[in-house]
Image 1: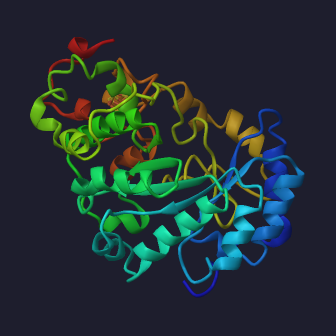
Image 2: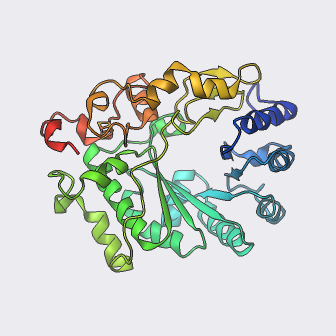
Amino acid sequence: MPSPQPGELSPSQGLEVIDAVASFGAPVPVLVFTGGDPLRRPDLFELLAHARERSVPFAVAPAVTDLLDARALERLSTSGASSISLSLDGALSATHDGIRGAEGSFDRTMGAVRELAARGARVQVNSVVMPRNLTELPKLFQLVRGSGASVWEVFFLVRTGRGAVVEDLPPDTWEEAAHFLLEASRYGTTVRAIEAPIVRRLLLTRDRDPVSSSPEKRALVRQLHELLGPPPGEVALRPSGTLDGDGTLFVAHDGSLQPGGLLPHSLGRLPGDDMVKVYRHHPLLRAIRERRLHGPCGYCSYRTVCGGSRARAFTATEDPLGTDPACLYGSTALPPLSSWSA
Ligand code: SF4
């Protein structure tokens, strides 16, 4: 997009958003500047400075474009950001460049990761799992481990926005990818799963789950072991974490408040509404946090630890409290839920 969308928050309104985040009080939430590309905002570094002054911890997720030059890398690495994240969606340049639609993006991304790490920044690599890169996940993890990044954040595709045209994966393949992430977390690099709360359910069920523990569902894990050898540690992922609206709140470019960046259901708007009140008291967010969900997610024994991806449920059913279609529990081919109980 050559120019901002209509209604983009002005510089002074951007400062007000940061003040609103600070008003949550201790512990102040982490504010993530993402996009699109936050570097397209001419006032980005003023906003980062204001966050620092207001003691709001922040992270930045720039896009890899010509704007991410040596000067921008230097300014970002000295900005006080707790983390700088870059997207890498393939272990091969052809895969990543193909997904991004930008030749040379793979090399520029790897260069930026190494440069930021060399400057002492805490670098996070973000990857989206989709049919096109699924079999590359073990190699991608190997690449991330050798790049200087300390965190690998893996998003399970939600078919909304640009992802709407990407083919989806069936639930048993998501389950395989979830097994893989649990195993990858045993190698010392911090691994996080986003829009993939079934990983938390799997932590509790994987040893006795008749479907997901079958060997043919473990091809990615086998590849991981072949590449990196036996894992040296225990599974580091934990059966707790955020969901859209439960630990997260998204502020869109025009100030619209949403449960998450991939869940475009407006809860209010800045300036005008009180961000803290919206987060704490909006009926939809309370229902998500209390797991008053619909369908299998509503009666599943694991809804408290898991809860399903609210964004994926919304994309599939237009109901933010609906069932996550990536979960095997939504399949009628499964044994009764009572036999899966904790
Ligand atoms: S049915 Fe819903 S809450 Fe239960 S494990 Fe699946 S996604 Fe999670």
